[in-house]
Length: 511
Picture 1 (tube, one colour):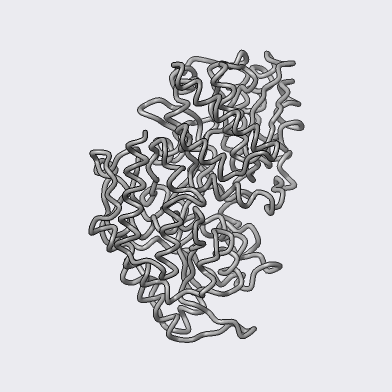
Picture 2 (picture 1 turned 135 degrees about the vertical axis):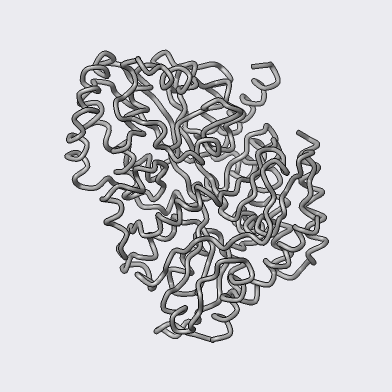
């Protein structure tokens, strides 16, 4: 690590300390991190916003029995893991449902069998980043495992141990858990959220992604076909709007609804679906901004055609506002984060329990390839954001940490987490009969998992990862602010896209 890179990391670590003490706003921290080249994925920012209101996720009641029934894994943990009895493994992650569930299983299962203690600190993602940059800048062994947002892979690739090269490829090593089967991780996910230029930076851990959902009762009443392309999606939303339907309580059912809060990063996420689905992108293969070309204009025009089919309040909705509005029966069709779907089936909080149906995302009208873009941008209507768990190369307990990392991401542990957390990353989780059984209209349903899997395997979209990306795209920054002027009718499409294009190009040039 050169001097400049170390200074950048210490700068972010200092900003994180100021944030923790209340002496810096999150907006200013994100700006500082972005200027130093540390962006956040869309899902990372969404989880930061939702963390305070999110309930604590807990494992199924039979979790211990199910883990103790894994004879081959448990025998290995006792025979191999117990070599490291008395060792303490440390990691810091954000407090997501998979983190909460998995960490809650450690004491009675993993530690009981191995004698390895695990200290799993869970904080907002901004604090996770500040801890990692502090550790890596000083080459500290204070954390053995890093929780990495997928947008950080390139920055920390030299601070991790490639477990594929070090452990997995060594088929004769008894440090490899029997039945772990790394190939079970969905193949399309590994390069998207865990790999950087051929190096396996970490092991996949979670993957929020966009899917499409519609109200079955509304579609049946109006005789509508589920849309399969972009014109069909717009036509369905228009038909619902024109029908003037209402819910039992008299509230209107709008054609659709967006996450269009002016100046909020959620608006940037929403915009990418329409940009990418019309052949546009933020960058071209030469690393230049192209968000004001004909394809981008087509995407913006499509987006604005949706505006009259939404409630006026859509320009105040972030991701949660959009999800809650659908749950209260406000929209007939929507493309949004799949992790909101289980809440819609909860009869205690939702007015559409059992009525929302998942469906394949409509096919893009045009689509650029990853090779036609730069900075890892990958167009696709299924906007994604994910994370992985990485083994620190500075750890003095790497073998013990690898034992724990395998247990935490093993098929059975991840299946337990997925029953409550809605972010499966293994194929076996999707195929698990217990997961399939839950594909019915109940709170915490998995009946949308089929569309999650399809979106992962063939429809994923990833934003560019150049150093100043967060500074131009995050809440309060140029892109969502300019988009806010457009969706509220205060500014035309051409001016908006020209302003955004200039800001992106300036950010690229700064990098």
